[in-house]
Length: 247
Image (cartoon, rainbow, N blue to C red; front, side, top):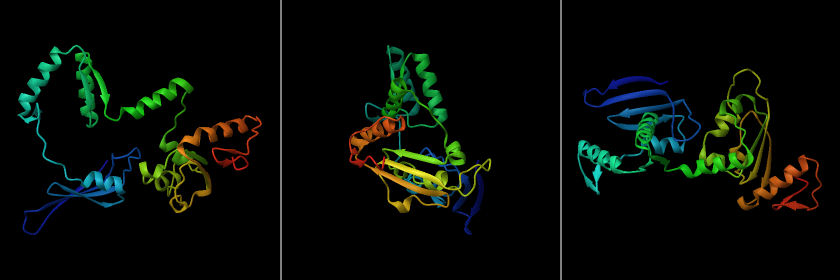
């Protein structure tokens, strides 16, 4: 949902469009409180933008044209050539897919009709997730559940702020929540990479626990943690460089 207002300069030539409550698509947070101005096709984030949203909305897009063998052609010629190639192929591959929901639906529909394969440019992460699901199982939640209900957050192997710059602001310590059940103080645990303490801030942030170790040692720390939770003795004094007493 977004609100739009339009205004023109005194000379009537330059047009400004102001969009409020804009949803940002440049990370998994989908923050929906941005204010963006469009001045003759140039976008500027005015409020609530992080580095990712600003670079995404304000980047200058180069001119683009359909191509065949590296040469610019008309869209009609490109479509005709693509149709001929797909028609002759036994198993066409549809890759890249830097598009929106409607574009993805169209690509998948075309792949199904042509008996093709769909492989997104960023599918490596998806394959890692599927491997975990196959080998160990997977329990998922949503950011809404986390925002409104969680009293303990354990962040493993990632500086989540780099991927989702407003995570602590919007999810860990939001100004309000649904249901009235948000824990007044949340415990945040980091295993692996640990951000600066000032980053983990907010009225709902309580104790912050850091089990700092390298990416390669995370499995060892988690193994020791799982063993202790199940009541097994761990003879080593450290796991992954982290004192067992702290684990």
